[in-house]
Length: 136
Image (cartoon, rainbow, N blue to C red; front, side):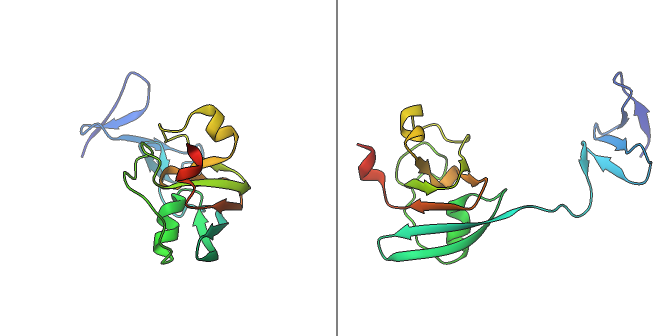
């Protein structure tokens, strides 16, 4: 496959995939992402469910609901897109990134409500689950 230099000076293949070389020239990247192993932070998620407290490990790039399911923990959900309230929990401690959600308003998020289907952990976090009814 041949490559040409685009207007940005970045080497681009004829298929349009950007190729970049690090300053050291040691490793090529595709689309600006480095190829190879990437270390992802893992956090401990403590879920306080009606059937008891359970802990699960969750990578920083994995939704909390997905990590719970992989660990065999059954949590409520419906849309899996952050557009409803079925998976609502309340953060008791720690922090999450739920910027993918579109249902909760700022006041609800500021009081700790979280949609577990679209929330990534940004620290170890404790969440009280099954809190949909507390929203209303």
